[in-house]
Image (cartoon, rainbow, N blue to C red; front, side, top):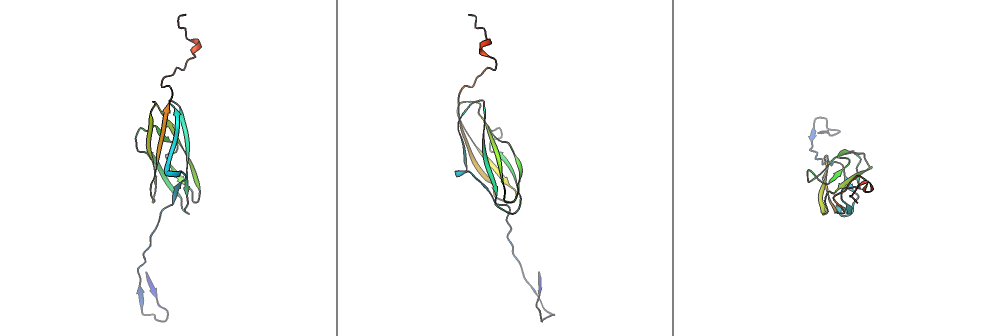
Length: 142
């Protein structure tokens, strides 16, 4: 950049400008960054919601994925955009297939900003075998 000093038309001064830019500032409204599904029934989908809040004046583009490739936790919306000064609700589905504790990490990669990780946990209980037919229609030979 060049600056001309008024009153001295023959001299120009060079200056260097240093600027720091920041991407969008996104927060998750979740205490401790842990989403606990509690005790859930096996073989049933259970949904919990997290809220992403864009506190900046520019849009925030995100991608969501779990650490485990074949996770029991699935974000319904895996990518999208959060408008400036707005929030977006993301549903997380847990589908447990056995009676045990499930854990994973959900990563939110925010373009041109810091990523956010949340811990996911669910404890599953109940029966892992079920029959879709009506038990009254089964003849046990009596």
